[in-house]
Length: 379
Image 1: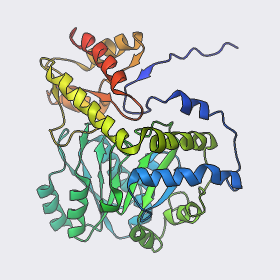
Image 2: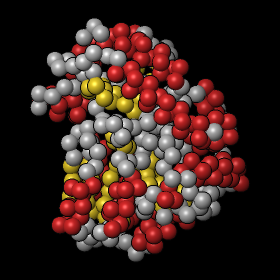
Image 3: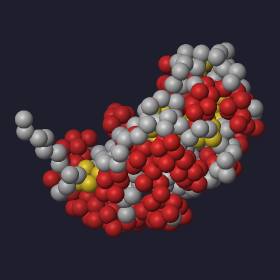
Image 4: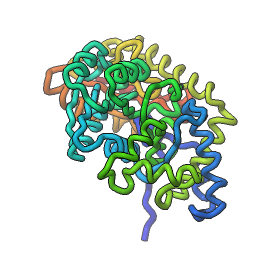
């Protein structure tokens, strides 16, 4: 039987992301028993370094859920929205809508407050909705992957709390790429994942859980098993996972987090992401007919979304630019599919995305932007 021939593409999509060779090699480290003392050799440093990245001195407890970021988000809904309570979701894009869909799929009394694609949360509009609806829980996206918009997490959480609701935050595509200052964020639970700005393969949903959230979850019923954060916390405090972890990913996570904290340095990592955002902004400014999609002041440090000139089609982005760059050894992101479909139906200009998260360097990004520019000028 012949071996598959997989192309070694350089990923500039928004996840999965580029993985360093050292992290790939860590996949070859030994398997281990997740209830054995070997487990502590991985998960003690993993938990300590993750808390450093989050900016928590231990106020928030960390739980790793086998699955994805959406697994942690679903756990937040099932564990923290009691029967009979209402949840307001605030959406600025496709992944904000997904948080709402998760709540609705679990039978929660959910409403979705939607803002136009490319816009951040308008706190005045949100305040009016909080006054009229009086929700018990509010969920929102910190960093909207489909649009490249970063919401003001602290201000949003503060407003939500002003009206007596509990804030749940999806930070899947920003954690590890920006300072979230979790202890001062106001979030009751912050969900993220491994496969974005941490520069790791997918496999764990990550939950940072406040004492407030834990206390409420203990009283909420019908949480299921893997979505019950109280069950996860019992094991987390023993430096374990509730169910058998992905041991390969745990080995990689241990190696990568040690690199982030002790070699690159957390502040340097965050500064590198901001530098790359600036590189894209400057590059777009020099392209005739192209613009940044997200408004200044709300642009993501991990993913940039660029507006194309009028007349550019989905087919041109997918079959033209993307495939030309594939031949050059790059995987280009021609824009979130549902977003471009919606923009096209409304007669609006289309977008494409540039993922600059994880371990992508400014040098790598500069090389990619030069190749991308050549193909865009052919449109």
